[in-house]
Length: 584
Image (tube, rainbow, N blue to C red; front, side, top):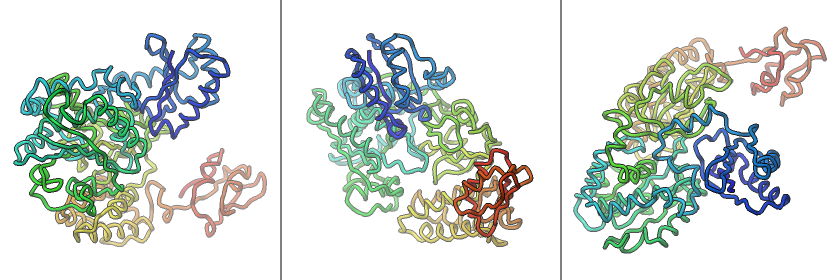
């Protein structure tokens, strides 16, 4: 029997290591010696971590336990491990199990199922068979053609056809070429690439081997942000084991092709997600974009032909080569083929990773796969594409998730982040948050981005602080359009998107802030106040929770809030059991 504990970043943050230690302690205490304990990555259902899978001696899953804290371990050991009876109380629900079972998992096919630190487990699920097939049975041109048939588009943001970039690098002159993986995942709320790196790093390496062979590269580089220490550690293990097996290095798979991959830890600059800024960082320079052309496929790293794709793009490649491009193209739509991984975050019940076919309606991702909105509140919008994306209102949730249809809303698919917002989210403040992020992350090279985003942010801050002026909306729109048209790189060109989309769909909230001095969502502190109504029973709980002693009153009498002292933290309203505190 084997116990497997999910130990991606989400699992560890939820206490998975403590759970593992408790399993080891209890098993030793009960003198159970025929049970092994193993680890795996995130399976996607982050809201259920720590997750513990119990397999029998034949490797068949007997039970998946969720939210397993150390205090539950003894029960599971006594009843299941020793007693042979599944502990139903901690078992995954049928609804949550169905959410996993109904997904079309290509990128996430091994995440949460294998130990990412053992290459043998990857090999046992057909790992490196695609690389062997490509290098020994196919020409580089045939590999590129298979990727073309698949319709795979870059999963990093722009959705550019993968085969075209590979072919451009292959046709470029020169014997020294590079293939680069952009693992600099910087969007707030996005963690797709991190989970693949932590849960199935060999799928990335195999995809890069195949891509490197197709374009004639001599070296691969994984540019990953240093804030991903677990991902880097598991990548280093995977690279070492791949070299030991002869999958990297000299004469791979008995061919005359030499190829290796190394890791470059980046400093976490958002702008380094842009390919020319990434290349500058790789060369030891400050991460700043340059004008194109020439494109990296012609002159990239050290002025040599270079191809750059992100983790999710490469993680699809081995599956495509092994199963055929037509099999991948059978998912999705005519122009947006295959599956897409999304990170669900924000006011969503079932936060985590999902992999669904392209073309699925947005509402299905949020309300079926994601389980809907926390506390069953109404959904206001979803931010797609990170700071470079835009807000899509609930009335457009019938929109199919394709590159073309999402672009029509003013947002982008991007790398796959979805931040879900409920009725209590202020869209003006949301635009301010994302613009503050892009303003801080601007490299400062061009005036439109450096100064334009700063001036836009100043206006948004003024509006959310209750000091909006007549004409601010028009000025915001003017600045946004100029920044979008004049900025040099993708960061600046897309920075205004959250502002433009919220102005497009939630203009009334901007007007309420400016002309009525009111925050519709009752979120902006400068525009709200707290008042205790006659529902108050005088229990004193709110007064005890107030951090600044702004609430006064006697026991069993209606209390009052001193508005001059109140810092509007909201703890009083959260703690009141009688709904006696209203936000005005």
